View 1 (cartoon, rainbow, N blue to C red):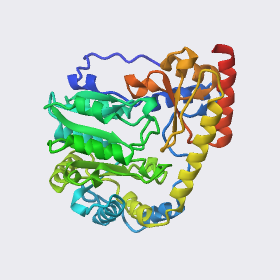
View 2: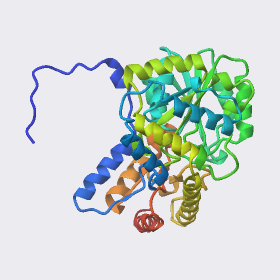
View 3: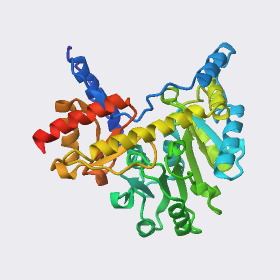
Length: 397
């Protein structure tokens, strides 16, 4: 390939230096490059269900396309979908929700981004889980805020310590991010922890971004939202969507539920960035929420089965250990016993064993000593990956 010469230097805005990335896509790209060289790679890096979108949802989208749902729609989302979401959230979180409090976006990330842009000024502090979804910290930095990590520790089953959270709250705290079930750890915030967190926030004018994108994939007990705690309704921004629950990652559709005055500002951000979410996908979203839920239950059961088998087998490999996750489809493995740092170990397993996983440090500094394995692959491939890891460990640990 010829090297392109340019006459003028590219002068990026300083804010671009504060923008992070999502390592899963970088590792996927590297793994795909190895595959093009003839290598056999087992993909346990990407956080995407390996199931097809339910047929009834696909049919609804096809019918919508043929019925003319191919034009612009309202920036906040089609009224019919906003009503379906309001009904669903009202039923599952036990709080009244109106369509005016719903904003539909192309994926869940815009809700994170818009929340930061709408609420966080230079120097404002945002408490967020670490290890946690990397886009939290990236967006806090981009908006000019100060990221304040709260460590999630294995000995607590990766549930945050509320007393530690209390110590991190200052007069500059603008927002607290919660995520349950959690990426990357598979941890869940028990109801008692969420209620204590709400009690700790008390009457402070601090908002909470509650990322509940995996709530339908919780293995133990019933999911509980801080939105359901008395006094927290108007201070909660609920993030949910269709990608994980209905295997619709490529459809790009998420939503936020929040007080109506904030929803109006989020809608302005949608207007200025994406205009609207694709109309035909929104019609499919109505079917996803109101149609047969059997595929969701079946997928959750299968993810739980895979996690259990993976953890059981992994715990027999020298240097590796893991707790059974309580939700999502990730196993967050402790690899301190290998003597390797997380990033180097992830690289070596890809290059030498043909197993693509993510370093725990991809999710923050408190992820050192861990690897994240996605079980969104066949049981056959998961067991083969573990065979490869064990062979590698026998020679290198």
